Image (cartoon, rainbow, N blue to C red; front, top):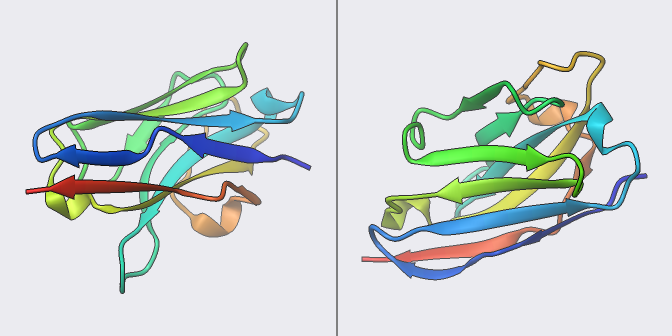
Length: 127
């Protein structure tokens, strides 16, 4: 069982930055690729970014590429989402998720492959 707890959300002006953290409770954190997703009011949950087990591979949604960076610290069992140049359309509840992977370099944007999810943290970007 993996428990994930996000933190770092809040209210920020357009153009500002936030860093989300996702702390995992498992001792097998390095067995999981980590993903970030978001859900805006009235919309479906969508992929934001993902980082591989070893932290060397990442992938991003086109809408955040060049502005968001995901990383992880395996010693701290924590994943991060650094969000820069935030836009009002980035307003959503952000979720981190863990996907068991046999490969150290694998990432995935497929939500069905993520077996564990955090509770979500609200990010609001004002114009």
